[in-house]
Image (cartoon, rainbow, N blue to C red):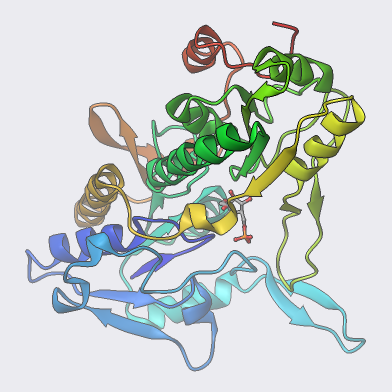
Length: 363
Ligand code: F6P
């Protein structure tokens, strides 16, 4: 049984296709898909679909997920409404495992980010034959060089910077572009380099608004000039905090990040920047549309390898890309730590070498 959990991302369908195509090369395996992560098993009636070669034809080009997904709840924290109207959660994992056994499911492949792989680990510890596949545009999973979806998001952000440059230059404006990534600055860092931004603000390097102001002024000759600032949604000023909201959506356990770009615009105006400032929030555009060729290939490799792990009976593992190989790593290691940008890493040095300011010093 295969399922997709957490936020969608380009390449999910390519993984599903890889799994089904590899499985169909033997007579031993039939693949079924569970709708909306584990919800398809937990709901009554169950929501399960058969996946054969016909069902996955051409899927490598399609964004989103044909199985649907959710980043709310799950078998260990199923939302339950109480008599007073408030919500609590129930652990339905044992009930789900019994149901999977009754259904004759021999193995599960869970395609998802860190939250989903924590669920995979919890279920593996309870004896489920499960293999994880790492996905997320944020690229914040450790033990894999890249998650699929990330490269597509970077491409989308880079193209957006290319577009903002022409309007910024025409109007002598400062443009702030807010990108996703949660606690990780990977999308911002990669797209800032690829797009030739002037400033890159990431969660791992708290910013000083005066340093950003100084960089902006360097980019202007009196009135004429422009400046492109890429800011990651999880960025925070020195001594400050992230900008986010509690959505109140049932089962949604995160703070919904967003708004740091507008806050930075206000901070820059208050610090005395007199140029026009505009903020563009790319939002879910970064997760939509067709995967790049790189992500299609990585996702296909993950799908095929995940199915092979199932065939080999190697469970409790997550497939990972460790250049040049696709390897299997224990789920327990995969979820131990987040993959964040190290402030002294090569890519940050490269960015500084290109004159990109991280807003952390007066350079
Ligand atoms: O984890 C992927 C991601 O797109 C983050 O970059 C972002 O903060 C979050 O999901 C948005 O979640 P939602 O789709 O619930 O708004």
